[in-house]
Length: 138
Length: 138
Length: 138
Image (tube, rainbow over all chains, first blue to last red; front, top):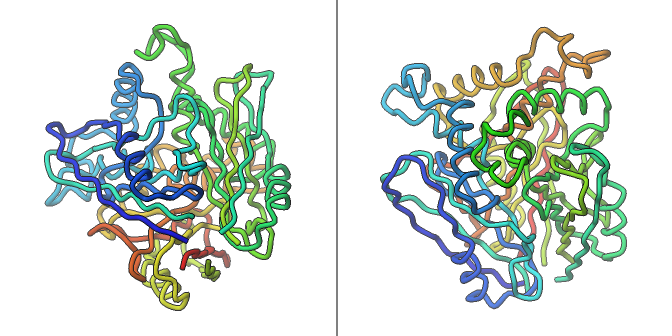
């Protein structure tokens, strides 16, 4: 069994942002030389997400509005976590969107459906944060 | 390391539907000849889900009501994604339910708890859509 | 490829409780002798969760309040599942929090970010329930 590991680093200019990382994950897979197996892609921070959905700006706007309705950023003092922090909402939003995705590797390629794109979801940005790409297989 | 891949196809008669696919996934595992490893089961479409829960009709009704409360289908024009589409709610509902499950393989069997059943969750049906089953192990 | 399997058992004194299981999962990994691969940690019950977040009491309080808002425990008869049961809300809460996590194994260690901790999330406790730890790799 072969394995491959790489960290992808991000620093967004806004508190919340979605970044398409499909190309970066595909490049990791190519570098790994693995043909059959799985790729795990996970946020290494607990106020960020890795998820799969459509790369469509309207939908991303809808996600923003929806997540703000489910877990509003403000008022900050509605959350006990926000004693020294102001990011409790980011922990909740990332929970809805998910920490990780596992993608099949088939014939040396990411085995994704026609519209599946992998995103980094930042909910407490403006600082350097990481995503882990771990590939195992043959 | 061995690997196995199969696509399961679905075309539901309703917009939203839950289908128990545990038997189909177990058949894939049997065909794979893999004894120890993991099974990845994921929706290949971004308006559908694969999740694990109870096969109980009352609960499935509760999921439907709950998901409609969290991410209503209508009015369609509340979502920016719905310019040419009417399925923004399906992207959100699938996000709550999850894209994928990873199940352990032990002794050639799906290593599930007593009530765990694997479901395909369709949120924008009436068209042919796919689930990927990928198994790796020995 | 090596594999390792262990069940972790829990019986909480309250209906809902979060338990940090990072140390127990790390002990499994050490016992497995696996250096490179992945760990799957999943609830074997459909009213419980395994998730990764911060070990911070204020945040855990926020999760409790938030999950009660998204999927209230009562009134019990608002859920069809609650004919013979009273735990429909637990199925929904666990869906939000997730069934499983997949964690990379690198150099014989859990490859977690700085604040990532693995939790068992109980939503219908006061009974014996299980988590599965499955590790594959070399």
